[in-house]
Image 1: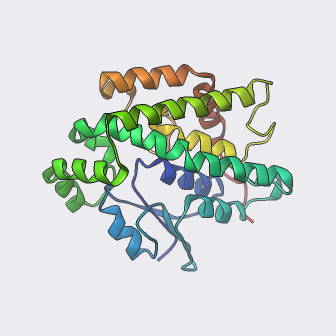
Image 2: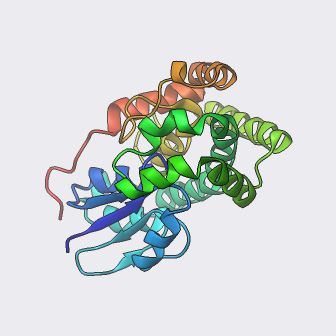
Length: 256
């Protein structure tokens, strides 16, 4: 079996890994699964309870998006790496870790709070490519999935509101960093920090250039659609869109 990436298809942490692998020209097969069912698939692949889990051609198991970025990055020439040598690379990793620990969980919590009440209507996107039996189970066990995800992530109204406030603070911090006219978060070079921000902002931006189709704002509940449009208009939201437009479809000329 060749390289494979175990995912929840709409997961922004999985998009972060998918983007890095695509950028490095890695040949792999994606194995998408529904939320909660993904735990079994992740463990069978050699990981823990979370995805992404990437299994290389050689059988090495990488069960963290940052580990996958590092692995993919090693296959690129130095001038295209997400972690440049020296201090810039260390700063890129620091910003990535900050986003992984804040923006990623907060955007996810808010998104689930807004979409779980209409989860069945989201099946067109949430179930893309998953095994047929998982599709059936998701539709039959919809209310139970709602309860399980809410319990697992501690989702309720006040926590969702607080999470959105923290997302907005990250957006303000990113906009402040970019206010001097720099192209990317660390200057003129695209790094892991930019990739992480654009990917992990996906739950609140629903970027059209995402690695697979996401629902457009008009398909979402009105309160969520209003927030998505507002955050898209934020300078940091516009930056994420520009990063997707300029970097998401790029591939290495020749992996090394």
